[in-house]
Every structure is written in C-alpha cells, then in structure tokens.
Amino acid sequence: MMEGKTIWIGGAVVVAAFALLVMQQRSGSEETALEQRIAGLTEQVEGLEAELAAVSARADAQAEALAESAALGSRLAKTVSGIGTASEGAGTAASPEMAAAVPEPAFEAAAPDAEAETAAPDGGTAVGGTAILADGAVRAFVSRIDTEGQRARVSVNGTMQDLAVGDSMTVAADGQDCAVTLDAVGGGQAALSAACGAPEDTGEAATDSAAAPAATGDGTTVAVGETALFGDGAVRVFLARVDAEAGRARIALNGLETTTIAVGDSADAGGGCALSVSGVEANRATFGYACGA
Image (tube, rainbow, N blue to C red):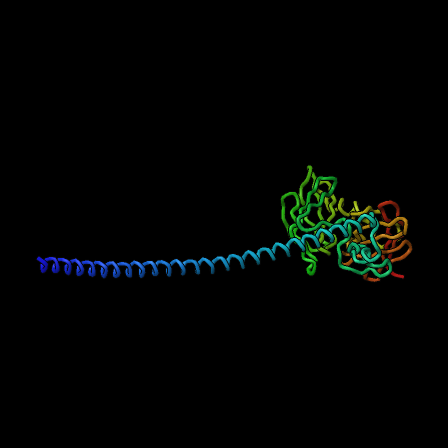
C-alpha cells in the first residue's frame, strides 16, 4: 500500500516538474516574441523620428522663406511709398536730367544750318500706314520701305507697285487718272503725293498742280505735303514743314535728303541751278529756281 502511494507521489512530482518545464519554455517563447515586437516598434519609432526631423527642417526652411518674403514685401512697400512721395513733388515738370535723357524727335534733331539727313520729311507714311491723297480720292498703303535703295512698295486703290524715289504710278479714281509719286524715303517713312486730272491730260495736270516754270525766278507756292517740280521735272522739291515764326522751310530735294532753308537762302539743285526760299506763311512756302549766273 505504501509502495503504491510512493509511486503515485513520485508520478505526481514528475508530472509537476514536466509542467513547470513546459511553462518555463512557453514563457521564454512569449518573452522572445514580445522582445521582437518591441524591437520592431522601436525601429518604427526611430523611423518616425527621422521623418519628423525632416519635416521640421522643411518647416524651418519655409518659415525662413516666409520671413524673407515678408521683409522683401516691406522693402517694396517702402520703395513704392518713396516713389509716390517723389512724384507728388515733381508735378508735371520734368527734371533737367530727365529732359536730357528723353531723345528729341528725329525730324527735330538737326540744327537749322546743318541739316543734311536721310530721314523722311514730316507727313511721311510708315510701313503699315495709309496715305490719304487728292482729297481722299487716292489711298496709298505702304507695305515695304527700302531706305538704302530709296524705294517703297505701295498699294494704291488696290494696285500694288514698287516705286523708286521720283517715280510715279497712274491709277483711276473718281473718273479721272491720278499720278501718285514717291517723293522721299527715309527714317522708316515714305513721302507720297498725288495729282489728278482728266485721263488725256494727267501728266500735264500733275505738272501744273505743283510746278513753276523752269529756270525762272518767279515764285512757286506749295503747301506742306505737296511737291514742286522745276527744270522740266529734273528737280523735285517736297515741302515737309514750315516754321513761319522762324522763317524756315524743310524740304526733301530730289528725294535724297531733307534740309532746312531759311527765307532768303538757297540750296544747290545741281546742274548749276539753285533753289531758294523767298517766303513762308502758315503751312505754305514760296520757292524760286534759277540757273546760271
């Protein structure tokens, strides 16, 4: 009987020891798993910390950029305010420095006594512009200008043609023929004139409308924008501007250059002939033409 109890107790001890061993092994496995999970979480936390540090750095950079923008905005506001204050004191009068910096118009640049230039006279038409001639009967559209070649391409009442300075083209307008002439080219402009008459006498009408008798001292008066012919058409004088107060007239002589002549003075017209200005009034000038001594 005692032996049976001893065996039972021994078996119970063995079972208990085995159970304790199993529990210890299980506890060790759980601890290992827990440690692994903790290690994984630690890595994730470290990764999040790195990302947070990067985000913080970007935020700091953006804050610095915003601060710089604010500073620039403040400086700009002060500058604009300063400009406004200066403008209030300036009014409509320009300072001497500003006046000196503004270029004068091309046709005003030369002095009255030294004015040989290639700029087209006032009243010229630029590329893309339309000259209205003969009281509106003729419309000449300028599509091209060749200053060096002294030529221009014009479309007159729908007819296009290339003209050299001094050349004319004839077009029909309001039942009559009109001779359109390229008087001068320069400065990106073309000076055009027109004379109209009956179909059979267009050439004569064109001459009579803006010419004086050849090689005489008789005065011939033309208005600004008109052309006078002298020497049987050998000399063409386009009147570009009149300064009645100063007693001067600016002309394009044979379409080659513009020059200003004072009343009483003359210009060499070539061939031993001279062109003179005998008077100016309003927008008109009177010319004289003489050859020989």
